[in-house]
Figure 1 (tube, protein in one colour):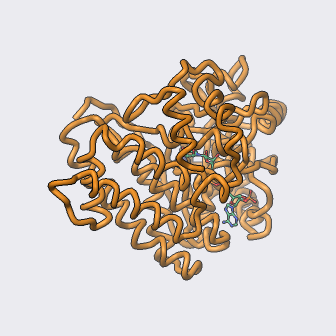
Figure 2 (spheres, rainbow, N blue to C red):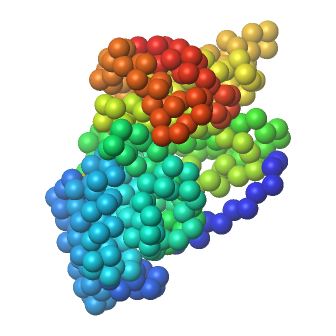
Figure 3 (cartoon, helix red, strand yellow):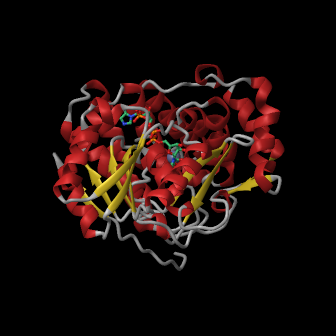
Length: 391
Ligand code: NZQ
Ligand code: ZN
């Protein structure tokens, strides 16, 4: 196991009606003037925005609102949010929504206290200072409610890039599984796929003997396999929603990723798809993961065979472990497409003719060195081959 430092101080309020604690939580973390940030309207329709405002009013906390975050959040609204936060003297940023809203809130929080262009952080500068961030989560997916990460699309070039730093880890996150019951089935399935992807990106490691994190990841994968179909069948199944919501947080706050190298090639390859076609991140991952895994599996066939046996219940073929590995990848593909996820470029709305552009954005965009690296290093030709496998 590699050396590591792990600091994950987010306070979680979990369960029915937990959003009514928001005012007290903002107060607890020293907020008195809040920027309320949300998306395209689901929090208005569900009444969540009004409930949160009432909770802030009860504590005498002031607020200004900025809605309009789009899925795959854009740099433009982040600049608007930074201006607003500075103008209004905001001292706390509260996100109501999913990963897109939370990531936009994190970018505003970091940018508001930084003299340069906030994009510097998405070009590699670590985030060391930010306004405190809180979240009320409405979709189990990205794990941003417990992560030190934020992913934003730069409209000048449509690059989708991540930034990181403990300063943007939420001070608190409110997780009420009932809030996810209004999700359309497609978004629920996207979330389940993203959570599985966060687990795979950590499972695919070059570090030896990391049994404790292997086993944690396997437990969370098994939970998703059990609960995913139940929640698609019955969107009002609170208990299934609750298990998925907490698994989604644990999949990505890095408790299962410490002490081991991680992959993230599938995420990097997918991010160019959601940047270019504005598809849902989880849907892009559904098409990306099986192709990447088939392409790289010979790097460590036994790792793929292990997850196939332990998680997907495939029989171990000791004479042909690659057959077991492939059976596991196929089981994953079948599971996510059965949930309603796309199978290929066509179903995702992507175009084969764009592959050279995708590869260029992925490998060279925004100062990248001509390749990406994770479980294996992939050059431009490898990335083109992988995109072609998705067609
Ligand atoms: O905008 P509204 O109206 O709220 O609608 C949203 C949006 O259209 C809707 N929605 C959310 N909760 C709802 C709901 N509709 C009905 N009822 C509810 N309860 O769902 C749509 C998708 O929302 P979004 O926030 O985009 O989803 P998600 O949480 O999947 O976030 C995706 C973004 O997170 C990034 C992705 O790249 C993508 O940009 N990621 C962030 C990570 C991080 N910060 O750690 C890691 C991830 O790997 C990921 O890359
Ligand atoms: Zn993801």
